[in-house]
Length: 275
Image (cartoon, rainbow, N blue to C red; front, side, top):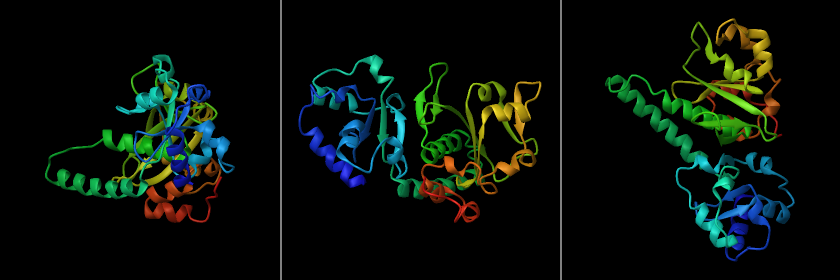
């Protein structure tokens, strides 16, 4: 499928499409490099097995806001292809669907873990919170087919499902959850529809996952303060390692197995279905 898409991309970009209406698309697929793109509506029209972006996410594509990329020659491609400039107001609405090299990323994660161990033993670093958080968020985006969009209310990015439901993604980077549990701001849960907790081990693999309705968390675990602590003993029945209740939310099963720890992967084996 991937090579077929890239082939269509070459054909599409070889000619102008000024009056085609494809310039109104909000979803564009990026090619092997970051210089060629393809409107999703064109791909849907040309292929029978792709109906929407979720079909691409199932095979490893990731959807991100255009503003997520620090540099992307999409604007130049857009002007050349449609003979018009990309307006600032449209940039905020556009999403880029791209195909990350999961094999290289998996290999790199292993190397990064080795480097962190060396730096920790040499007392060069004390923690690496920023990297694990961003990596865990990337795992969530890839596995659940989330759309990452620049936040309108704060610095950073928010996550949404395909049907525009807001998701709060929380990363717990430990080999075991602390006695107090995972700390989450109550206000962030109240502003979201779903809450995902990615339990990332110290070696950067996924050791477990929780996917819950946010209003359920507020009703069941809410406290008088501004913080909610989700202890393993309280939410253990909802771990993916134990429960099938929310496994249907997984869009990319291959990615989940690839980035899971061996023990977590064993617990998931045979229970996942291609949705």
